[in-house]
Image 1: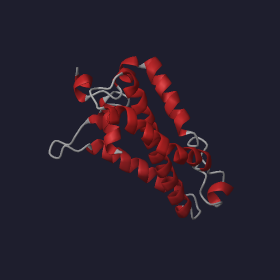
Image 2: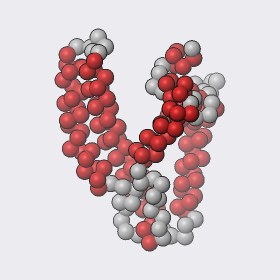
Image 3: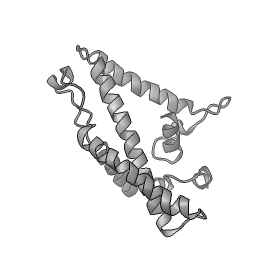
Image 4: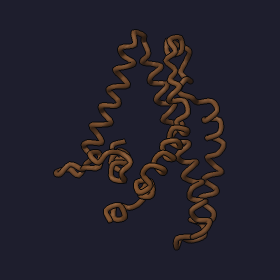
Length: 172
């Protein structure tokens, strides 16, 4: 996650500090500290809720992690299909016409049930549910990501245009 903070800071989506690297190690140390602070906040909230929410927290975060990985693989494969549709980028037929659709097709059966069955509230019925702690703000992460992308595109089109660019493009 530290490298995600680094990239988003470098591209102007987040403030600039996470885009700095450690002078001696070349690591995104501010992004790493941000990650640690966010994790500490989440664990602290669960720890001071007065219930034994450890198993629910573990289940909740691991389910989201698996769902994210499945969706990332599915959407990356679909994006490769779309990217190679107009321009083969100098790649051979296997790399641009065969492998991406096959990978996307392979991941689709996993992504559909994962999206319909796995939610942040898929932890076993516990105090997490009885106290209304099922966070509705986290239920539709794709919606919040889309809403932020639209906001960024409208309010900071330069930052939006740089997303996904190379370091050389961003520096220029």
